[in-house]
Each structure stands twice: as C-alpha cells, then as structure tokens.
Image 1: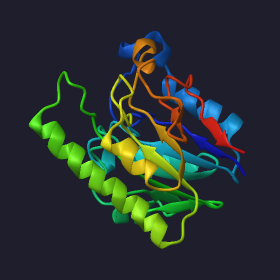
Image 2: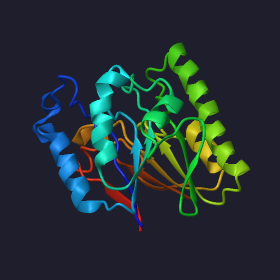
Image 3: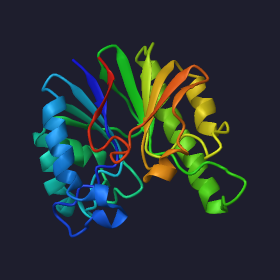
Length: 230
C-alpha cells in the first residue's frame, strides 16, 4: 500500500470554469490528473487531497466532481480549501460518499499513521495581514489543535498533517502552525494553494524542525499524484 498526495484539483465538470487562463499547462488539467491517477494509484493505496477540490458553489454542482474522485482507485482523504464553498456538512458528505473521508476537526488513519489537518490561512508577513486575517489565523490554529488532539486521544505515535495553505509566509519564518505541529509527533506535512512557477518557489519544502514538508499543488506536480510513503 502506498500513500499519495495531490492538492488543488480544481475540478469543474459541473460548472464552466476553464483553468487554462492561468497558463497553458492547465489546459485539460482534469483529464491529465485522471489519467496520471489511474496510472500511478492502485485500489489498495490512499490519496490525500488537501483542498480546492471542486469549483462547484453548492454540493449539487460539486457532486459530479466528487463522483469522479470517488470512482478513481484508492482510498481518499479530503480536506477543504478556500474555494470549496460546497463543503458545508462533513457528516452529509460522508453519508453521500461513504468510501471517502472528509477531514474536519478530527482524524483518520493510514497504516500506523494518523492523518490530521485543517485548511490553515495566510501567515503574518509584515506586509499585508489584516484584522480579518488574524481572526481566521487564530481560528485555524484551534481547528488544527482539535484535529491533532483527536489523534493523540486515540494513541497516535506518528502523524501526517494536511493543510491547504502554506504553513509559513514566503520567508519561511516560524508561524503558529509550525509551532503547533512541532508540539505533536508530526512526521510530515502536505499542503497546496500555491500556483505558478515563481509562486511555487515561495513554498516551504524539505525538513524544517524535524518535520518534512511537501508542496503538492497539482500544477507543481505536473498534475500527477505524488507518492509520499511506500
């Protein structure tokens, strides 16, 4: 069994939202993801999806995208991103898609790892960080702790964390998220949100305070799920 990750699918099978306005590499990106997924991922594998999954505004609109994901090989663990407006009730989603895990303020498992996470938010950067940013930043810290504490109550020894937003600012300065993650037995963090070659360079990658960080935005991965554990 393998563990894969890919974020920012930005599927839009149920809405008109062409992505190639963001670059030629986004042309037919959904078809690229599906083809690569089917080639790389097997039924016994697990795929982490850290946010920005569907452009649908309502579950009715996003359902066609979720149906496609549900039909692909492997177990899926999903986290909401800043564009996932269709994600209102995790319990309703779980009822509609019982084979997929919709992670929110809780935890699930992959072999002997616990999977935790929250959407996250922009980190303070000394340039533009509004009072509204601070409010959401504080709220997401609480949600991250809820998820991590849920794992610890179940005896977690090893944790993989999912965020949608990067865990630091562009200077890779410590943030409340990196500090919280360091308090727990977190081995690895996957996140997305960043798009474009120059923006990708701003993402934290590799080891940081003993934790390995992976940027898994779909365009950064050339629209192919990345294996992060064998």
